Length: 587
Image (cartoon, rainbow, N blue to C red; front, side, top):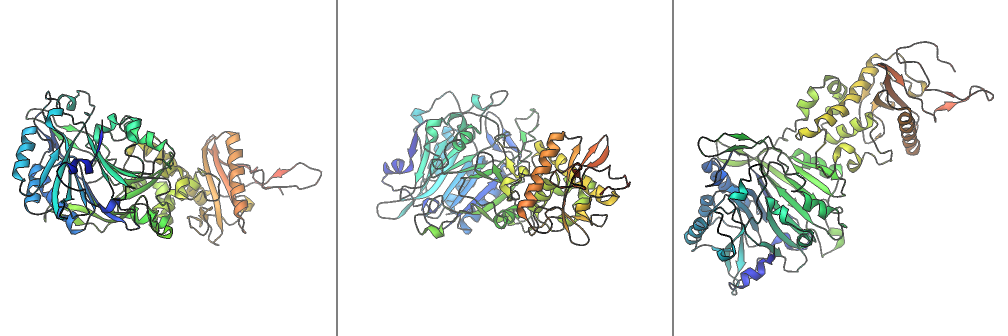
């Protein structure tokens, strides 16, 4: 499929392309507005789009009003969403982008006749452009369009509103090949290029991803923002994400790009013609902003405010960053740094996209309304289903710090790297995603595919708390640990997860039922070395618990040894009976 620069399209009409803020390589961030709508949807051989067209029109119209009022430089709706009558009403009412803005409007399906009628109806206010009909096959009826709405520049420097309509180039895949039997394919993807030539932007529509060959990808993954709009029940399907895997597998210096995947919300309901069954997708949303390796921060000061607005951080094992949108219907307003800054290096912002506001649809006022409260992540309900863990985490939960929860759970399970900076969010396994893109965040319980992992991660802290309350004996190096001790995590003492009543930080790890001896040895060595390198007065306050035949035991820690007599064998402090055994302790 060929890529065509927007400048070349406009040149044929005596126009110049817009100077888009998002493509200016300056230190100024640009404002982005992204809509993730809920269903239901309607799909038949006559139309694909929102089931409730009036509701979608109201949501779409108010979204455009919000885009204009907020000064959004980029506004995006997903595939098949925006009703054409809503777009027509906006154009006729003068509700259009500013001269430095681009609106990427995934629109409901349309036919050739329908688009020709639309062109005539808005001809006085807007120039509608698309690839020639003659180049498109005639054996399919419906077009899947995205409308690229912007202000082009005439020779006299006045502006001309342009709706450049791009058609999907490749059908989606389902069990009955529904879209393949309907879709009239386009053949072009349009690319915007900034005035300096350094930055570009382009849009693909859902299964266009199937057509993106490795060679063609080079048009979109170097200092580019690639916007991938979708109505997709399986957004992390291997075939859909192949272009991302290819991009992320190339040297990051050659693929310095943002990839913005915008899908509909989760749990879509699909309606069809009368008499056809209603289908529940049971889908995730999967909307994600992917950032280059050096262009996104994982610092708590950046991650937590985003988290509280429904934008969740994960580090990709492919060495990129993923900012995952809350699955519910919402409009997200972000401030996004440019991929390249030609000005003073000290002003280059490498923190990545930051949330400004999250909006929810208010049916009473028919407006997108700012939401002050953090959206429910599902964690509260999930941890409530594990009462021992919930009780154990009481002090940590009171801090309202989601990253502290991720850290204390990893530490309690001994699931850390052993490096002194293990508590960096990039290094915590629950905050990482592999090529399957399953989201394993403990404090974001929306991707149910990871619930088994989450349950396993909650179990150790509950077991530790149980032993704190009930254990009659603790090894001497953790003197002071008793029923009054609590599970905590603080940045001041990041390698410890238990605090005694005398404020002695302690590391207590639970490794489950009958772990292999070699694993116990390696884990003990790793944790001891971590505390030793960190130094300080509490570096020997380490205890590892496991169970054998249902009985709690302490793991031996070779480094914590002494000699009772120079002529006798080395005796390990940790080679002790089960916790409930209160017999004499030798030495």
